[in-house]
Length: 221
Image (cartoon, rainbow, N blue to C red; front, side, top):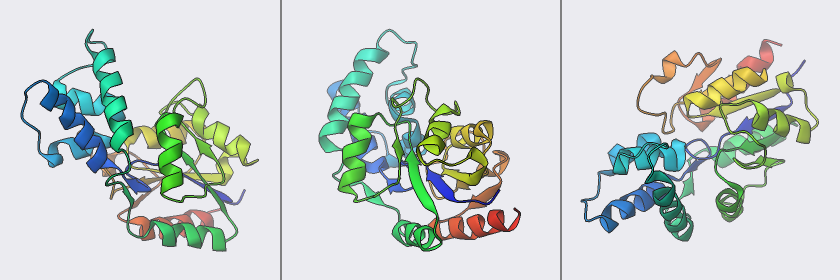
């Protein structure tokens, strides 16, 4: 089956949202009279949202009794500043134009909840064919259901879609959904396992590299 749709993660893949996410995380430290962390400490976990940022900023695991209150405060603060510094990565618009010119559809599958993701996607003027958020289905990535839901919404078979993301869980979700995967090495990429060890079908160093990866994967069909 040929490739006819490209699905993207959002934070760290299409959009550089880490500055606003890191700012909201550091605000939680400020409220506790703690010094701000360097941006470089927070950027790698930006794709992990509150879970990763609060672990680094405050040392809170998701099972910590203090986590729910800290998460809610972080999300409210982030909501107020989410579009101050967030921008599309250079080359993203050109990549999306190439995809559309090739007659392919594209969409977004993110773990960001809809009330945060949808306004930001709109403010960046991204006209995705489908947007699946972290609360669209009962599951979040690395579960395959969000990707499978996006494929259904586009009326595509899973193996007719490629999934592009900057976190290991994106590759795991794509593989579980039966989709070829492209690791976005320009993104945040986590703290632990190198991108080269994710077993993605392709690795792209920048958005233009995704187009080369798409062409390569199409040629294999």
